[in-house]
Length: 191
Image 1 (cartoon, rainbow, N blue to C red):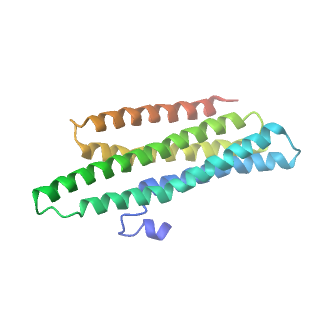
Image 2 (cartoon, rainbow, N blue to C red):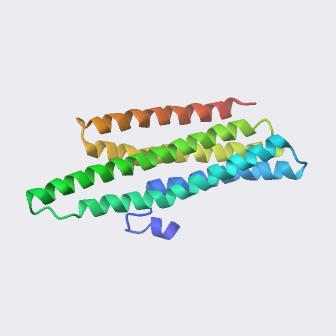
């Protein structure tokens, strides 16, 4: 993946790399829980593991989804535009693909925020020796959320300042950014 990311191919791009980073951040939190679970079963740890596994699976699948959405957008951009009908169909397809390619990263960033909230919830139950792994995972989750939002911001900017869909997506983007920062701050302040 590293070599493909560093190539001239447009995918995987920032959203996909951010999704993989989020999955790795979540995996660090899972590791901390697994190490804690070895010391003795506890219902809180088992519940947190189940929640975390589902979150990490969802975070990881966002990478493939990001590639799919971007490829859909590229296909829409390549539609013919020789006639008025073709131009109208292309315009509609590009608008729909742009919206989807923005909603996908916003959903992925929302999932990273949920994972940050989950990471905060496990701090009281993990062994002291692995709290740093939870915090490192949270740092990756925050970075992933912010990186994912960069792509969404770029997509919104391409939609145009007068587009009502762009306004709604921009508001959601700002809300997700604030939620990510707040969730990470709670982890930083937890002692």
